[in-house]
Length: 120
Image (cartoon, rainbow, N blue to C red):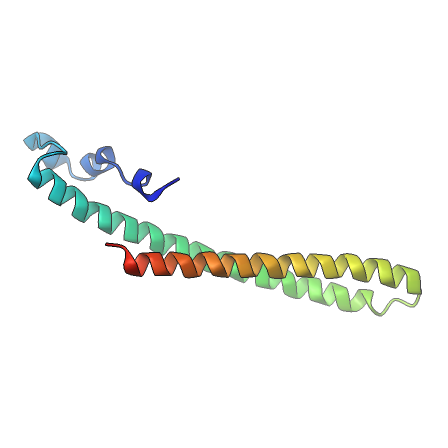
């Protein structure tokens, strides 16, 4: 969903019932100014929450990766060579997938913070 759809005129009227009582239209100069100010504030708050959510997801994924690394180390100590190869390969793929997820989340967080800084 685009940022324009995150905060609409109806959301603005719900937050500011005095504007609705005055009968101010969206296309009026006063309505445009008030909506733009509220829109910027709402979007920056939304982007901040999205960055926080990325932080928590990165922390969860890091914890999951650490658990999978310990599993990988135990798999590498198996005496049977074929079982060790199969189980280590599966564990390696899971660790790699988790690393990929962490990298993707970091990229999303970086883009979100950049957007939050440059949002006009």
